Image 1 (cartoon, rainbow, N blue to C red):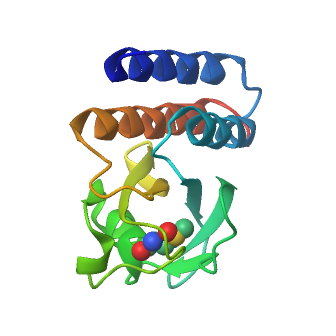
Image 2 (cartoon, rainbow, N blue to C red):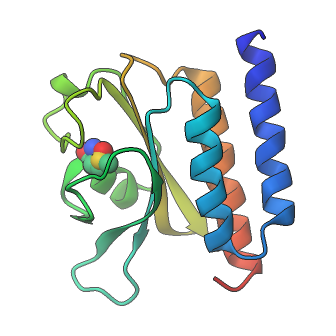
Length: 161
Ligand code: SME
């Protein structure tokens, strides 16, 4: 199947998941599995959520698919993850070996995207995807991952955890 068609299909499956998942936690579990299983270049897919009330703020690993990572708690001043959460911006790194912020999760990782998740305009966490392929996160991938993060933010706004 053409890449564009596949991406459209995955996007629609994500919308369907959001409709059927009873809770935001359930949605995040199912979403990481879907993205990891359906998109060849997504080799590690996970959510980090800001720990409620933590001072200083801390990102804590939530649902994920892929190898276990040593980075289960990340302060906002560390990593690509900290950069995305503290800026509220999507961060795309085409070559992780050239980015001094990068915290290694797997030796095989070549590129990474981190997209913040917002609830009522505030960052509450992020969706992090690692790829074994360099520069995997082209514009159409960025749009898909941003779509996924928006869907989770909406679910968090409208449902219990
Ligand atoms: N690479 C991330 C750390 C998380 S692992 O990739 C799962 C970072 O630099 O923040």
